[in-house]
Every structure is written in C-alpha cells, then in structure tokens.
Length: 157
Ligand SMILES: [Zn+2]
Image (cartoon, rainbow, N blue to C red):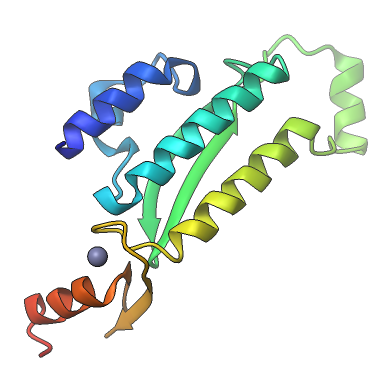
C-alpha cells in the first residue's frame, strides 16, 4: 500500500473524524507518518470514532494533523469551532470560569496517550519493536535495522 492509498482508506472509512471542508491541499499534509505507524493511526481512528459515537459527539471533533515530531507520533484533534451566536450571559461566564475539560476530551486525551506511547516503541518504517534514536539533532523512532540504514544514508557510518 502506498502512502496515498493509506490516506485515502482512512479518509473513506473515518469520514466523521475529518473536516468536510478540508481541501486536497489540506489532505496532502494531514497524515505524514511512515508505514510502521499506520496500524496505530488506524487504531486511533477506529477507537476515537467509536468513543465519539458512544458519547453522541460524532462530528464535533476533527483530526487536524497526524505527524512525526522529534521522533514522536503527534495527533492533533480539536473540537469543531463553537457557533458564533453564543449569548452574552454564557460568554461572560466563560471569561470568569474557563470551561472544564469534558469527559470526551479526557477520553480522547487518554486514547492519544496510549497510541503515542506504543509509537514510542515502534519503528516508524516497518512497525518492528524500536526506540528513539538521536543523531546530530535528528530524531527518529526506529528498529536497529532501520537505524543502521538511516546512519548509512546520512553518511554517518
Ligand atoms: Zn524498522
């Protein structure tokens, strides 16, 4: 499966999790992680979709980006913007007393924690057991074999 095919399959199967206003340009950079992490992305999408359905919040949260940063899997999911016609009273209350995280926000955060924790131990290239490697300020979570290849490619060995 190519990266484009993977993104297309996620887009097709988890329609509820993505902003329908995303352009093709948005989609080109929405999911940019290597194949070793694709099963984790898939698992995250499946479980967050179920979670949102169970809590009646389907369509209220959108995944904005899934990428690698400093060797870690980063998943950005955000509530859909609140309607603009909030009345004055609740607006004022919010200023005084910022909203507490909702149960769904906490569950999504726990789920993301579980998935990214697994990614920390999974090679982003091939999905084998791995760990974080840092070379010359470059970060990569990979298995021993891909660490070797990476160093060779960079001319470090
Ligand atoms: Zn590997």
